Image (cartoon, rainbow, N blue to C red; front, side, top):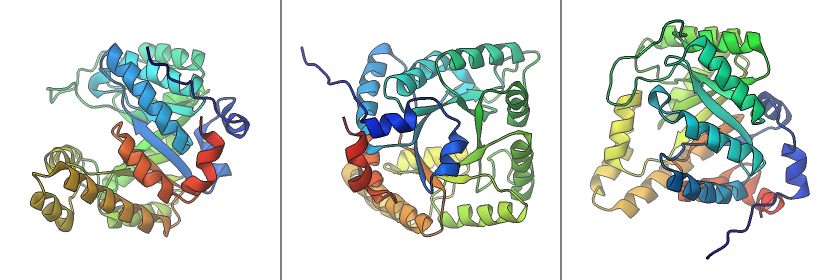
Length: 318
């Protein structure tokens, strides 16, 4: 039977993560923060495989992980289990997603207490999406209707750092970008520490949105979310669901090579690498990488980050 060597962070890495911290402290202390978003597997076997993969992710020194919740809270238990593993077994700060539309206020409090007991001090406060296969929300009585309400409740309760989502191209349900920015400012004023954006494929949307928010007086970190497009079919589905624009050049390249998965992967990696390099020149506070649990994505992009793999791979490698 094969044995997997347990990830043992170096003393320097332990110094950074030996006690839980609010993520805003990372953004205040560091000039650049690298975060990776992952999603829990649906089965016990899949979860064990994923944990091994994420152990390899850890060697690329993310400052924190973000663990998704699933439409309608469908992966709630696995979200908690995976976040607990990352926080306590890999010693990497972890933010658990928390959606509000499918839970009462009392249920939210139970979930927050569980996270506290597991040493998790940061949540991504979201409204949430309808359950898979449905277009309607199933709101229980006394549920929060909007992320802003959830943020305010967590802030009033205390004990957690709070992240929230931003939409540089506007929310799919609210194409009025000015109104969408207004709602985002409301969330920030309710107690949000930082914003991680939905992924985008054209940097101009993010840069214009960032500058408009700065003009509105927003000063919290605005962290761009990046995703590597590796399949035209998958990308089109995600773009339609999220309201994301696909640049014509990228679409044509993926269409031309739609029968060659490896070529599409390389096209996607090159596109995202170019995005990242351009964003770095704009002085971004970090990136939030939607890795889709793919090791190749992290392997390709991590060495491009400001601190460079040469500097940080050694201190936190197993």
